[in-house]
Structures are given as C-alpha cells and as structure tokens.
Length: 324
Image (tube, rainbow, N blue to C red):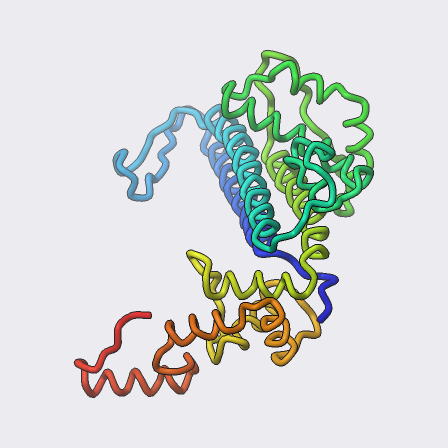
C-alpha cells in the first residue's frame, strides 16, 4: 500500500469545500460584474428592476442606481467569504484532531510547542516549526480578519493593522506560491478603526491559505496513521460514522473499505486481500462484517441484485423491503 498521496476524511471534505467555494465566489462576483455592465448601458435616469427569484419580497426590486449597491454587495461577498473559509478550516482542525484521537496516536510534541492558529496540532502531529512559519503567519492574519468581520462589523482592530504592517507578512507574500500571471499577490491597506476594503480575491486567497494549512497538517497526520490507521479510518467512515461517507461499492465489507481507500482517500497500490489483512490487524474486520450484514441482510447491493429487487417489487408491491 502506497500512502504518499493519501489524505484523511477531514481533508477530503475541506478540498470539496475549497473547490466549491472558489466557484461560488467567481460565479457570484461575475454576476455582479455582468449587472454592472448592464446598468452602465441603461444609464440616463432609467429605473432598474431586478428579479427576486421567488423570494418573499415582491415580484421584483426597483433601483434608481446600482453602482453603489453592487460595490457594497461585492464587499459583503468578500467579508462573508473570509468568515466562511475560516469556519471550514476550523471544521478541518476539529476533524483532524478527532481522527488523531480515534486512532489512539501519541502526540509527538506538546500542543504548547505549536502555533495558536493551528491550535497546536502542528506540534502534536510532528510538523517542524520552520515548515509552518509562513503558512501560520498568513492563517493568523485571516483569522484576525475574520474576527473583525464577525465581531467588529469589518472595522479593523489594532491587532489586524499591526499584522498588516509587519514586514515579515510582506516578505511572506512575496514567497507565497501562486499561479503564473501578471497580477501581484496583495492585501488591502488597513488602518485601525476603519472599514477594510476586502475584495472577492481576498476571500479566495483566505481559502487557499487554509487549504495549504490543512494539507500540511494532513501530510503529517497520514504519516502518523500509516496503512493500518488509514484502513481503520476508512472502515469507520464506511460503517460507523453518522452520517457515513457515501461509497459507490457495496459488494462486500472489504470491497467497500478498499474502494474508499483508493477512490476517496487516494491510497495507491491497495488490494482487497491487503485491505482485509490490515483490518484484521487493527481488530475491526469482524465488526465491519457484522455491520455490513446488518445493513444488507439480503446480500450485496450489486446492480443485478437491485434489478431483481425492482422486478420483484413491481410484480408484488407487498414484498417491498424496508428502506436501507
């Protein structure tokens, strides 16, 4: 089993969020920009109408000018985006800690030796301080930015202003990896007590920072897991988590776990026999077989079995089985 590119369930979920978040920000801001162009063409004292999409505030809304509302909506989008990206990373941290505890792993170093923005998980998982310095600095900045958005109506605190003025943050921005392009990675100017001019790109930037934080932590977590820990984790999310992670294969208990390892968690070179052997070593094999049998008392959920059941139920509705 090759776990070099493997990931945990919490990182899988964060990646799904990160990808969807980027699309949502771009689609929403693109729609606002499209509306800006339409409003410019219709200028000259015209009244603009916007559909409400069935929401309970009339058939339409009417506006004499859209320039200011569109600008405010873009800022609002960025503020909410920063708060949402921070919350997603908090969800990852909580999940990663739960996976670490469920696996019964011992902390490499005390939490107090780690960074506060990572809640000390970097020390627990064995991440070297030098490897996390830039990422932690950026994550701290956006954590404080989120606090200002949520608790100060986006007015900058002294802490946020001092972080923005820090020369080390500026140096980190120059080193931060980015896609090829002519644009420069930048943050808005910040003055204590003033509203911060966040743009949608800053929300995406925050999500990228948190994704990189999670990926760094997750690499150490997966290495601490080893193949046995990953197999145990996959079995937990197949059979015992509430809700369980969706699995496309339901032939038997071992196949379900192997499918999740290979497809969802990116484990390479894993076989059914090897997966079952790992589950036996971790003492979970008998439990997941019992759970599989409980869920699927009429046998595997294969395509032929589903077709046979559908035909049987069509001929005799009284034979309909209880939902699974």
